[in-house]
Image (cartoon, one colour):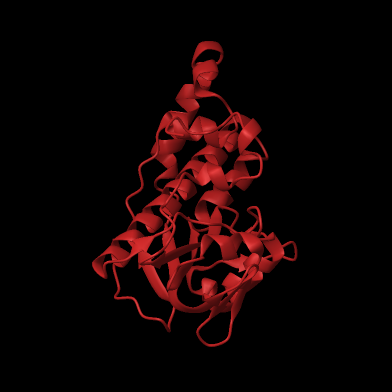
Length: 238
């Protein structure tokens, strides 16, 4: 992984990530329950294995991020150095007690999406397998980036929160995406927003990770989700 020293000003780029995905992760990425698939549709296991083998050659994981100091936090607004704001009660609650925040956009690049679009014309099972791989891989990239941010914070004796995404409870998608993309140069890794505030390429994500001496301990990501109580696809470690 290529590393750059962080600062509070420019966007930094991290690349050359080594991501690990498993068959179960790919199946969950398709919205399936691995145990049931293994028992009822074993042919999908082979497709998932193929998706991992070929998909790793189709992705170029990159993360663009900035570290920004926090000047103040109210019930629904986080004021950043320079006057920018993050608005929403969820992100304000997440960053309460933090001294700063890492804002990031991550992407797998466009090749995987192009292959998925080709498969959609003639081989839907393969398209779904690639889509599941992409979902698993971007999740793995998110977790790897958060571990990197936590390690940076720890070097300064600070604690990092868990990640928080635009669209999660208390941080509306449109507002969150607009706020992050105004502060992070996502175009530097080939990511843009469409009119619905979704990212292009599709296997991309944006996130915030707070840090500070009094930052909230990192909990499980599922705890932040509005459908956590009824979700059938929580990972085994929840």
